[in-house]
Amino acid sequence: MTQVSDPATDQLSPIDGGALPPVVLGSLSPSRAADFKSCPLLYRYRCVDRLPEQPSRAAVRGTMVHSVLESLFDLPATQRTVEAARSMLPEAWAQVREAEPAVATLFEADADGAEFAEWMASAATLLGNYFALEDPARLEPAAREERVEVIVDGVRLRGIVDRLDVSGAGDLRVVDYKTGASPREAFEAKALFQMKFYALVLWRTRGVVPRQLRLMYLADQDTLSYAPDADELTRFERTLMAIWAAIQRAMQTGDFRPSPSRLCDWCDFKAHCPAWGGTPPPFPQDAVLTDPRDAVPPSPS
Image (cartoon, rainbow, N blue to C red; front, side, top):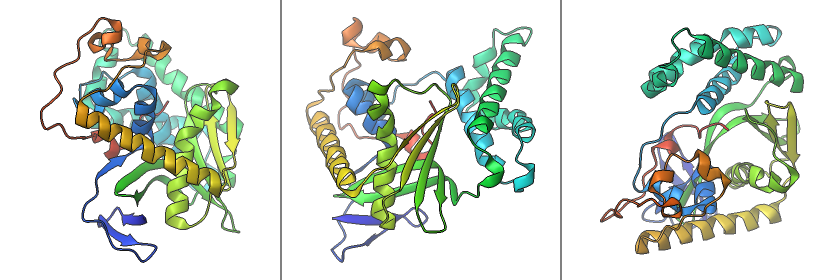
């Protein structure tokens, strides 16, 4: 049974007339579901052990660019220029530092400020690339940084959509900004996992299958668009429930196995990974799943 949750009250309302479940069993965001799919041990370190991770310049830059693109649409249409967007970067940097003081360490060794200046210039370049992809003066988004969620079989599926556009006919377009480069064709399905997650939640809460899912890759000025259908989203829902079932089995046994790949070179937990000669910490007794990241937008990539 699918149920809708109101984030403001956290109250559940059945949309099919069925009874409410006594409890919500847990929650799953697109980023955490993708973690478990790619490497169960990564999921464990983030959601069970909650090991600390160091902020990266690329991730923080992505957060800043997302913040600017959200704020850009607060301006009147005629004022949504690349110059206006770039002028917002210092304030976005200040907001990131206030929200996450650890980012201050990113430029500790930058004595003359040259690396910071180059980094800020790269953020300005990404914003310029956005304007090469679309004209924000011609858009009026229905929502920005919109939290969406739905309860499916006791599991809260939730995430934050960068932008939601609604046409006059009621068609939905889900837009996600990526500050990296577009994936090769073989990896497009992985890139669309997050977008299908959002499409599923929107379909279950609004009763409308999004007409288009659009990923905007600012590093190389490319886009990836996809049109899902109801049958596909139904299958995707079953996939998410299978992932959740696998997470529950792993929680019962403590067996979160690593899945080595080239991504390991960028993993903060490599030193703790048995695939690389490390030793995981003891599995916590009475372990529970907690993920503070679910309360904020997933890290941009």
